[in-house]
Length: 211
Length: 190
Image (cartoon, rainbow over all chains, first blue to last red; front, side, top):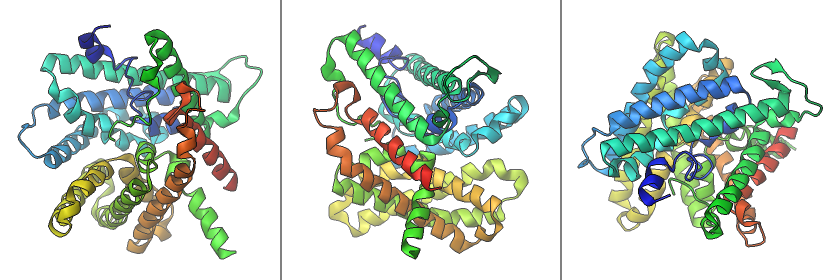
C-alpha cells in the first residue's frame, strides 16, 4: 500500500483508531457487550464524528490551539443534540443502554485532537475519505466486539439464543471488556506484523493518540 | 477499619476500573512519576472545580432541556481550561511549556467529562448527594481514584513494556489485560 492510500484508508485496518490509536475505548469496553449496543454506538459515533469534523473544518486555522480545541468541543456538543433527538425517535432503547457514554462520544479524541493533528492537514476530499475510513474502522471493531462478547457472554446473537456449550459470563462485565480488548489489540498487532513483515512497527511503546 | 472500608469504597467506585473512563489518559500518566503527578493533579483540579460548576448547572437546568447538559459542561471545562492555561502562564512562566501539555491532555477527555456525567447520574438516583459538597467530594474522589489506578499501572509499567513480553502484546495490549485483572479484583469487592 503506498503512502497516499495508507493515509486515506489506513483508518479501517492499518491504523485503526481503537486497536492502534487507543481512542474511544471506554464505550467499547463498557457498552460493547451486545450487538444492539454496538449498533446504537455505531450510529451515534458515526453521526456525531462525521458531522462535527466536517463542520469543524471551517473553523479558521489562525485561531490559537486552545481556542480551536474549545470550538471543536462546542461544535460536537451542538451536533450531539439533534443526533440524540433522532436517536430518541429511531433507537429509543439505545439511549438508556448507552447512558453516559452517549455524550462522551461527542468529546472523543478523534474530534477534539485528531482533527487538528491529522484531518485538517489534508485537502477536503481526502479528509472526508480518511475520516470515513476511521469511522468504518471504529464500526468494524465495535461490531466485532459486540458480536463476540454477546455470543460468549450470553450465548445469543442479536438477542436470539444460539447453541453454545460454554459461556463466559465475565465477558459482559467491564473487566471482561478490558481483557477482551487487550487480547484483540494483541491479535490485531500480530496479524499486522505478519502482513507487513516488519515487526518493529508493532514493537512501539504505548501508542496513545493524544500523547 | 474505617480506613480499609474507605479504601474499598474508593476502589469499588473507581471510574477507571469500574467504568473505563480516562483509560487512554492513564496510559500517558503511568509512563513516569512526573507524568503521573502532573496529569493526576490537573485532572483532579478539573473534576473537583468542574463538579462544583456542574452542580450549579444541574440545579438550574430544567429536565426538558437535559440535552443541553453536555453543551454547558463543555463550556465549564472550556472556561477552566483557559483559566488554568492563563494561570500557569502568569504565575509559573518557567514551567508553562511543560505544564500546558498536561492541561491540553486533561481538559477534554472521558476522565473529566465522564466524571461530571457520572456524578450527575448518581445524584439523580440518590437525592442526598444532590448538594454542592456531594458533587465536590465526588469530583475529588474521582481524582483520587485516578491517582490510585495510575499508581497501580505505574508499578507494572516497565514489566508490561519489557522485551520479555511478546512483541504483539507489548505496551498497551498488555496494559489493558493488566487493568482488566485489577478491575476483576475490584469487582469482587463490590
